[in-house]
Image 1: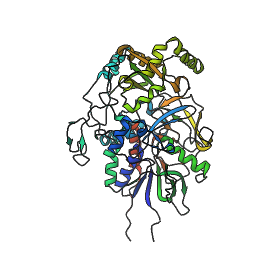
Image 2: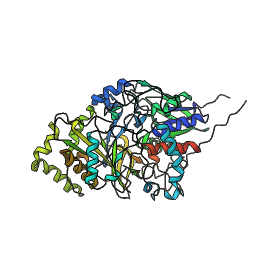
Image 3: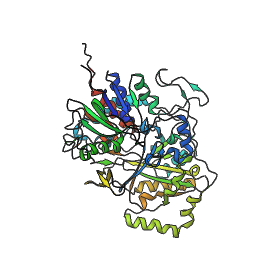
Image 4: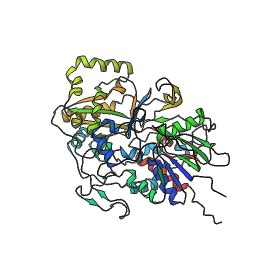
Length: 532
């Protein structure tokens, strides 16, 4: 009998969830393919993206085929990476484990007696694979952050972040230092401060240097430029995946069939595929009504500080290199910006403290009249990106949004996701801890602290780490997937990415997503070998 399946397992997405799953399932004997919406990226792509916003941006409908997407909804503005390797192409290679509060969050603590203990070996394996190193370099931006921590009375929490970067000799190609010579050759970090636009020399441990590298050696096929529109159960077993090209309607793809499907398209992508399958194409009608619930932003805020000295240059170093805790649940890192982020100066507005949204918006606008020099200086500043420190502030706090699906005026009556307020406390658009930290950095650096316009005037949350929306639960009334990541009422369909995580992590979540995927794969069965 001819095998009617294209693959045993098709994985949608090649980020931290998809890459880990692909390697581990291939090691267990399964025939695996990865479908990736974005392109396979090259050194040339990264070099162009470092200085060109057009080369960086992912807006395929407008002809921009980069790998960094900025998306705005009614209640949240978010950033994400798209391309082979997913978010690892644009992340700062920060590999932190969350504090104990994350594991004990009521959203999922009842599903396991001790999540921290169960996930521990999977964190350890993810750390090994992602290649954590100590960053030997600290620059002026790190010094400012340390002094700010001292001013805030939390100096003991300041330190270097654990990083997935090779800090070897930057002037030569070295044999693989992470996998006993079995991985790709590497070049040491040059401290160029451009991790967010892809590492041009290959020092950053993006997923093509570890999980995807070994997955392809195990026979995993990576098929880029394929957008999954919806998933449909096959009448005689498995699932059909329906595809389209992300930007070229002249390119068509036949549906693909797999015994089992893993959605790892990121928290937004996996939600959208499931919503479309359930509500538009009606091929997965039994997906839980919890789909789109408990969407988390990692309780984040972004704040900026521009040095008044036009000759200051903070860009030497890894994009993120140090961090501290402003309080027990509030974590922050500094960020160095590449030249192509220069457009972000127009996202900045005067810093205002006010939890009441309308009043805060009005006070922000008023600041252009009461503090015109500082308020307007940023827009005309020379070397803005070299002078600017961004702080990413994250919390393990309990707040959330919901997403729903349908045609929207904002998207030209096309189908898409929409945000809405959930039953719990909504994700913040104002974090007093973020403003306090920005002011502390401004004081020690002689800078001007600023907020994001979408937060201060738009009353939106901002995040680079969207989570949830297809979370674990004890049953379909409580979640979309079970503790083994399988979708309720859809055997053989799994969600393994940030969408599965039910609580705010409170730190950069890449390592946590990888650890979740390691745990999932460890429970996935070995393929049985049959002999004719």
